[in-house]
Amino acid sequence: MGRRRGRSLHVTGTRPDGTMLRAGFRIARTTATGRFRVRGTGIHVQGAVILDRTSAGAAGPGWLYDAACGGCHGADARGSLERPAIRCSVHVQPEAHAGLRNGMPAFPAGQLSLADLASIESWLAALCAADGPDALPADLYASNCARCHGADGAGASNVSGLQGPEIRCRSRELLLSELSGAEGGMPDFSDLSDAQAQTITTFVRGLCPGPLPPY
Image (tube, rainbow, N blue to C red; front, side):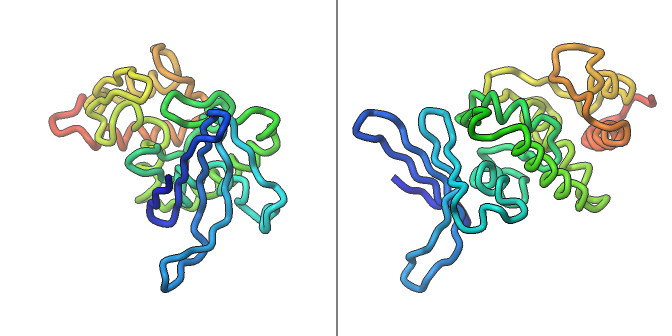
């Protein structure tokens, strides 16, 4: 079964031995007849991902991101309604190796090495760094906070069933303490720079619909 989403094609099926086959493709060109030529971005079989490193363009800049991540998270890494943004994420490596309980496959070390993940992280860092001052705060929040706390900071239940509380009207001091890990109960965001943590804090407080604590 195939389903097209924008410039992506997602195909799912079952092999004769009962294993699940999922494939994501980026559409390279469409024709007047509706047929299209695609280049594969990875085959997902029982939670593992097989990358075709012999395909044309496999050595090009950003190929690893496009092959392993772009089919779900988008060419700009800003995600979609069903998949989170990762453009400015600081958790790319652990989530890629472990997978998540939202249908995201794990990428075993044999498929994505530390060097591969470093390449993907560098690619994403370049995308994030390309943000202007208007886009950066939203991208930092969306990539690191929105999946648990919601797009508007009002709280949400993430794909693992954990309820993230409302955070939009908290004090700056508390938000910065939580990002540093001092409050517990949150993932480690120590890889955020001080400037990034301050940017996220300012963005979150800007979502508050009422009076803000003055500190």
